[in-house]
Amino acid sequence: MPSEHSRPDGVAELCCLGGHVAFYGGVYDAVRGAALGGDVNLFTVIGILLTLAAALSYLNFRFLRLPPTIGLMLQSLLLSLALIGLYAAGVPLVAPVRVFLDSINFNEVLMHGMLSFLLFAGALEINLDDLLSVKLEVGLFATLGVAGSLVIVGLLLHVILDALGLPLPLMACLLFGALISPTDPVAVLSMLEHMRAPKDLENQIAGEALFNDGFGVVAFVVLLHVAGGRAAGTGEAMVLLAREAGGGLAFGLLLGWAGYLILKSVDDYPVEILITLAMVAGGYALAWELEISGPLAMVMAGLFIGNRGRRIAMSDKTRQNLDRFWELIDVFLNAVLFVLIGLEVLAISDTLTGSHLLAGAVAVPVVLVARLVSIGVPQTALRTFRKYPPRALAILTWAGLRGGIPVALALSLPHGHARDVLLSVTYVVVAFSILVQGTTVRPLIALAERKASDL
Image (cartoon, rainbow, N blue to C red; front, side):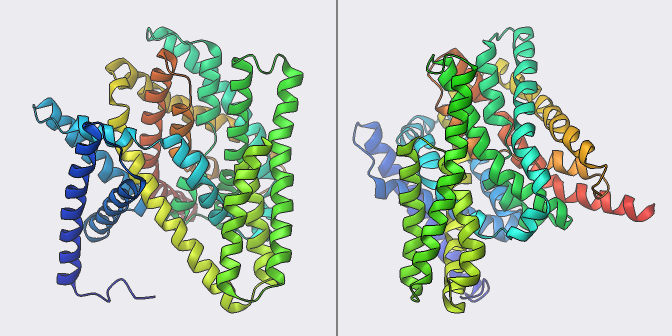
């Protein structure tokens, strides 16, 4: 693999300039065609997003030096705000760009496309022994923690929105609690590469993010069924929850075992990489058809292949190539995803009224307090026989990032007043989480370590 300095600076800058020219030219042609009623084809969409992601990645590497996902989202968000500012000044650029963004169904792209590959790639890197060492924490945080946060956020938001003159039904607020309570595995796993947390805390944060997201999505689906009258009582809701979560875990384990047996019978890395791709794409699609949790299935399959499969079913050559392939997939999809999150403010700008933004600003501390309580209670109970690093609860609370999944779930809500409010609030919480929490977790850990050394 060529090093990042193998190309002369002048050539790199020329390539970057060419990328900018190609991007703006491509955007103009695409959005002009869309604005005139023409369809934006898939290749054009992919080409524009990839070029933008590459250009912003280059600028972040050369100048900002932020963690990649944070740098990409910050730049794309600033680009979106600049376009909105130009529109307010009389330069009509926002409308055609919004038409282009409307051609991308963010919910479908993430929840039924990118998420399966990102979760599998993330789970591949998790050491099962490390995960089992914190299994109590991960199990409690991912289940009771999510449930507790869901209720706290839902109840507090219900009261706060009523006080702000934006009353919503309690069920709508609980839906927001379900989509915002889980930490986002994509954002969290990307952040862990840069935060340098103590090993036990890192294992807790990574394991919790992988599993609580799956349980959070299941809770969101169950509440949607209840709100829509498709689950009449608590019993039906619990059956639905058990089927979605339990079925996803069992199916993922079965999928991982089947993939392991096939990989064990082959020693040709291109074929083995193709098998893992089929596991993810085909397995996620089948989980969707079976109405069980695809995210949980991908986590279980990734853990199985990344541990037992890597140790027993692969040669050294296959292991190296498989790791490089999935690392590239992870980097590529993360770049596109966080660019899309930043651009999404253009697509939802009509809902971002002053009162909605105020509600979002108030929701930020609500979500943080809910997380502090929901993981603080089980951690306090575990302290009787567990030892944690100094300021562990503060770090776990602040490191609980939210990412694209809450935005995608909010976009899936039925159109109406409730969706507009919750979508705005969700975006504000996600933006704060990534741009503020994501950039300050590492200093918080360093501060905790300094205070511990002074004791």
